[in-house]
Length: 175
Image 1 (cartoon, rainbow, N blue to C red):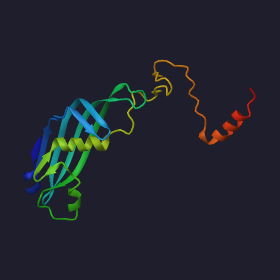
Image 2: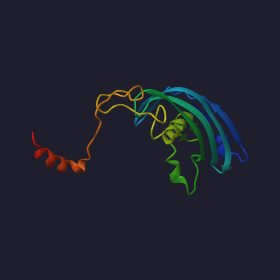
Image 3: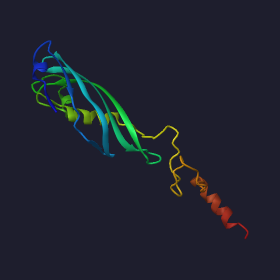
């Protein structure tokens, strides 16, 4: 959805409150494609902040379906997005002109809410997605989900720095 910012960027004292729907059905990032299972839309507050400059504040909540990083079960990820930007119109002349190139959600006098939300999801994406904090993951030997039951596999991994000593012991072992 595009929101016209021309009044807020050009008229002193002008404010704009907007509620926009999020029409994305999935989020595509460099780390995968994730289905959006719910969203609250996005609440925006824009206010004049100077000639060709406005203050943008917004909030949204989005939930995704994503696999747990340890056991690979689908889990729900909820992102509470709360953001604030100083945005500039196309005729802005000032010190922060290079900074505008970093805001892909502004096109002339229009704010692209889908691009804004996509940017915020990228910035707020969790480093690790877990189904629960104490998720045990899967067995590296047989692939059994260790949250359900223990498999009994030998998961001992020797220290590779000690491999030469193990070779010496194996070479001198009596049969």
